[in-house]
Every structure is written in C-alpha cells, then in structure tokens.
Image (cartoon, rainbow, N blue to C red; front, side, top):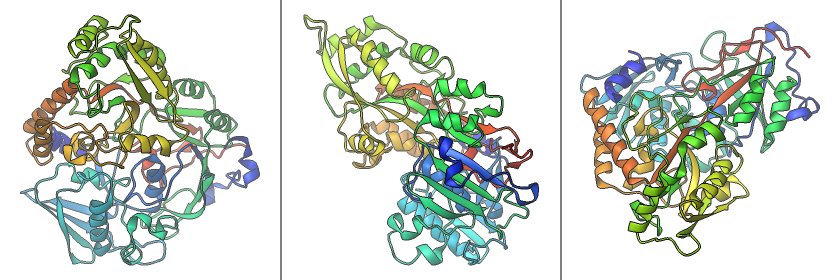
Length: 533
C-alpha cells in the first residue's frame, strides 16, 4: 500500500578554492563512478541522525546509515533494510522482515537486535518526542524479524522509518553504556548505508566513499561524495557556475534561485521537499507581556501584510502559509482566518488591549530576532516588519545574532519577544507539527520545541486524539479544528512555505527528487554525462 494511500487513510487515514583542496577530481571514467562535489552552508555537529534533527545532520546521516524503509516522490514506502513489513489488523504492531545480506561498515551483520536497539534509542533521545511515543517495545523473535509493539495505533510510524528519521545504529558500538548523544562514534560513524565517512574537517568539508559491501547490488553508483561547507552563498553560486561544484541543495534565496535558473549548465528543481514541509513564520513569546494578550498578537498579524511579503519581497517564488500544516499537505485546512492587512482592525485590538496611541503615534516597543544566514527568508522579513508594524504604532528593534547557536540559545531560553523562524512539518503532524504546540513540549533549552510557551488544553486534546485515530474522516476533522484554534490564538503568524530549490550540474542522472530529496540515500545518482574540465 502506498504511503500516500496510508497517509490519506490514516492521516486523512567553496567556491574557487576547491581545485586546490584536492577534491576537483571527478573526471573519472564511467566504470569507476566518479566523484560528486556538493556545497552547503549546513555545518553538522556530528553525523548521528538518531539523536539530532535538521538538514546538516540528515544529509550525511542518510548516506552513512540505512533505515527500515525509504520513499519515492509519490509518498510510496519502499523496501530498504526491511524487505517487507506488515501492520496488524488492530494497528498495535508492525512486523519488519529484514534483508539477510546487510552488514555494517565494519563487516558485522545487521540484525533485528540492531533495529530494536535503534528504535528505542531514537525514542529516548531524538528531539521529536511525539514521533515514537506510541512505541512500547521491539521484539526480536529471530535475527531478521523485528516486531514493533505499540500502546496505540500510530498512523505516522511508517513515515518515521524514513532514512532521515530512523537510522539503524550498530548495537555492538553504541550499546556500550556511553551517552549516545555524545558518543565518540557520532563523529566516526559506522553504519550500513551506501557510503562510509572517511574524512571530516569541522566547518570545512567531509568526504563519503562508496561502501563496497552495500546490500543493494550495483549501488551506490558514485565512488565518492565530497561535501564542502561554504557559508558565502555567492561563492557557492560561482562554484556551481564554474562546475567546481555539482550540487547546491536547499537554496532558498529568491535572487539566488533566479540566478541559478539562468545558468546553462545547471538544472534547478523545487522537487524533493514535500516530506519536509518547511514553513517560514513569526513566533511570539506568549508568556511575555504584552504578547501574552491574544489581542496584541492578532493586531500584529493584521498589520504584517503577508501578501506583500510573498509577492514583493519574495518575487512570487514563495507560496503563502496560513496555518501550522504546510501548504500542499492533504491535511492543510484552508478555511482559517487569513489576517489580511487591516490597520484599522489592528488599532482597535491594541486599543482594547490597553495600548492606545501616544502623542508620538507609538503604542509599544518590541524586539524581533531572526535566524542568521538566510537573509531573504529571515532578516529581510524582520526588517520589513520593523517598518510595517510602525504603521500600527509598534516600534520594533531588529536584534541580530552573530551565529545560529546564539539565536537558538536566546529562543530556547525564552529570551525573546518575537522571532522569525523556519520549522519543518516532517511529513506527518505527529512527527513535525505537534512539537510546536503541545503544552508538554515546553522544554527550556531545546530549540524547535514549544519555544512559544503556547498552551491550550483543547489543542493538547485534539493532537493526542489525532495521533492515534485511524479513521480518515475523524483525523481530518481533528486537524481541521486544531488549525483553526491555533490560527485564532496566534502563537505564530504564518508567513510562507520556504521556497527550497536544489541545483544540479547537467549530466547527472537519477536526481534525488523523492519526498525527502537529498535527505535520502544518494545511491542511485550518477554521472550520465561526465562533466567537462
């Protein structure tokens, strides 16, 4: 059964220095597969996707570790480490039958014990606490059978077996009693995926080389993937234009996308992000005055002018987002309050909340933060809001952070008024949406939890019920009501779906355009036409 069907039935149902660095060597023969050079601004802290979310970790983790399932571009689950799977009629267990020829990079076989260990490790340590909350235990009746036992039906479980979400770890390495979050193997990982990590220079590059004993015959196609960390987007663009780099993933800058589309030797696509569901938004600290008053948050929403942001600031490249479930999801509820620009209504709400205009026209002063490094989606929107909200009598100070950790520390410790942010749906609300709105997930010090400190008992009730509901109609109705409540409460003002694009050198075949894009195993991508040099 396709994931789309399951989802509907369960959820509805470097630049110019590369040559000198020794990586500009992909002019290999067709027989040896050649090398792919990728540039990214994402800096991984480590390579273990079992305990860390995000693009920086997921890209290498999905090459190093294999997962039970993988997905195509139509939401269909495909065999990977699990050659088959079966959900019990009552929805309380899922049985995985594993391939018998998978080995880790150190030669040890992959068994059901590794699967059981990994699932329970992810449940205990992954930041997405709702993702495997329904898992009670994993039984291992034989070395190639794993039976996942659930406390209640879990419509999102098969999707949670994706490469970026469920890497299978070697128990013989990680089961030594050390803290998995700080385990030395996180920087020297041993997986069973198509590539082995052979070199890492933090903040500069990492190298992945073909694993000759990979369990899928004839894969991976490439010999090597070199990932260069390039913080300067212009340098990255120059590199792909010169063919010093072959892949630029997760490009969000509108001007960058337009520039890439004009390069004759480059293919640009927005495919490969439907599972991610990235939303760009303005978050409020709902426990801090004056933003603890819903009328103030609503007033800001009526003054913000989403239409101008998407049509002008983003040149129409970004689709408007109006609620907590990403546009394009079968669970997206379009019939919510859109907060169309209405300065008069904004003023009325601020008056009613006790913030009348002062003689100088101002009503209050607030700060707005943003994630550094993604100017068009973050800083530019924050700067625009500074000028736009002044029309409503709100004086905004745009507070820059020198780096991502500084921003994350401020937001996760609740030291902010408002902040721009980009957060992923991760396919199913249970995985990527619930974490932002559940009262139980207000966790100080944890970024991309409920950092808004939003709490609504009805929302908690709806999300808990929808997480286990197997009726398509009932689950749809629950998420519809949830979205309407959240949009009315405005812990977040939703702006747009982030316009992610990937750019590839022409001559590459089998591009990763599945629902997870480059956060999938790159074992099929290959040089159909070797690049000229």
